[in-house]
Image (cartoon, rainbow, N blue to C red; front, side, top):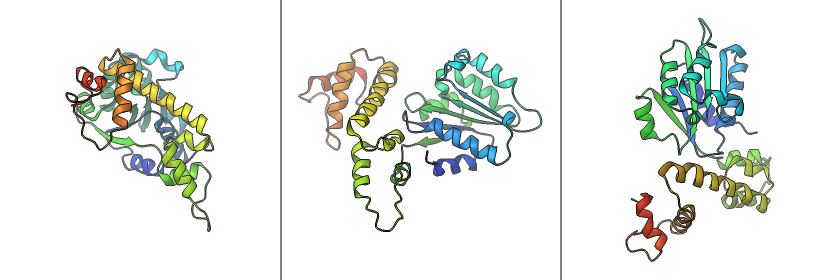
Length: 252
């Protein structure tokens, strides 16, 4: 595990400030791990276990909290008196009408609130509406190159170290944290990334905008990924799937 110090410092700067800390980012970029690292930092600073409430709504253990009344009641009865309670809700979008629970907790005294969600579910425009300007957003990215080197166990400061192969792997395989631990095994990394791609394609994009033709959507995405930097017209394109993209409002 590599410490995501850039994001940890951003969270620390907003500690105990009366705003909701929202951590957004693509799936598998390390949001849940960041929360665990920040909780460890809080405990190291002297915060007691009973002052920390941590909920991962993708964990079946918390299936009963997928509506806002249950989530709010669960947290409310565990709040500490006369000292701060640090509340972490991971994958908050799993809770129906989560903003109602979050807004209710926000008005409580001495509640330091942190939530995470993927970019597909927690968009800046929607947050402004749902949380009424009571939040700050920290958009998290996958690993930087220096973080990738650290996770891969490469000491970039060691004299004589040649990072060219690592850079090639970083550019070729991408920077999702788990890929750095797969020892540049191309087959394993491709399988892992394909899983992320399919999850985003089906769970995030298709479900969100109501696409029922998944193969069409996949063809459009593949075409666009090979056309980066080139102008594309949905009306003049020779590719039928691109012409059909307008009905899904994928290209504006």
